[in-house]
Amino acid sequence: MLVNRKLANDAVGIQLLIRTTFSVEEQQGIVDVQAAIESCTGAANLADELINTAGWNVTLAHPGIVSRMKQNPDKSDHTDAFVLANLKRIGYLPKVWLAPEEIRQLRSLVRHRAQLVKQRTRIKLRIRALLREHRVSSPMGVRPWTQVWLAWLMRVPFNAASAFLREEYLEEIQRLNNKILRLEKKLIAQTADDALVKRLLQMEGIGPITAITMRAEIACFDRFDSGKQLSRYCGVTPRNASSGQKAGGCRSRESRESRFAGGADPGRSETDVVQFPLEYFCHATQTKCKAA
Image 1 (cartoon, helix red, strand yellow):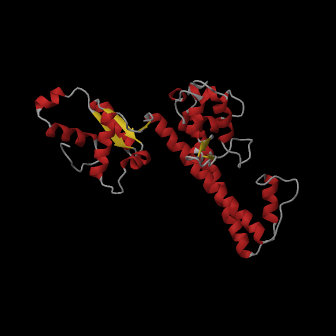
Image 2 (cartoon, one colour; image 1 turned 120 degrees about the vertical axis):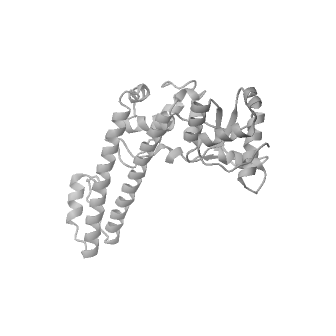
Image 3 (cartoon, one colour; image 1 turned 90 degrees about the vertical axis):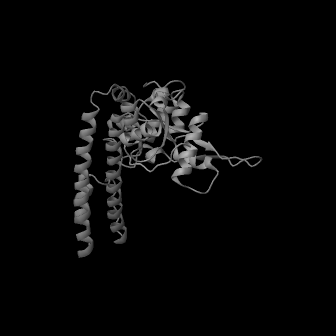
């Protein structure tokens, strides 16, 4: 190890360190700079800066796999940097795909929408809890959260405290509905000219939000060699849990980003998630994905 310094999260400072560490003659002999950065918040932007401004070959490392490969319970920036450099040197660094800037921006919007939908779901569950607390059952043949159901809900004879909470919850749901609708309009407008989203929308069972979510989270389908790899990435296939003579069977994996469960498309119930179209899409493809 030639140098160990604590630096700001800044590409200019990192390049300056290299220039002050090596002589001019040594710098002229450096043809290709291989760098590894542990994937964390801000790592993608830093990697982009180093690639675009300095021309470095930067790899984002998977922090969880690198941690297991260390075989050392101790953790420090010095040891982490040494492990990353060594794994990069021997070509065994577990890589994380560096998404383009536009995809990272789209992911931010998609994941923000998912958070809003989760908040709305929690409020709806609180209203359900109020009904259970007062031992009130929904009318038969009326779908929950429709205009008819909401009109019935307002007529339920609650006590003063529960009636106040009902109004608070309904106002919060309306506020979240407006925010989700505004965000969905922005997402649709932002991907209006996206060829991949248009191709996904032609597939049965995939609506606008599902297509945009797949575009944001999967991004480039051609980076997967087969539908099986894509299924693994999406978390819709089980994984083997056996060891030695012990057959533990298969355990299902949790879906990525609640495995793309960010709410439903118009016309689908809110409990439906984006996972069904993903399973259909992944298992229907055995080679390079059709949408690539």
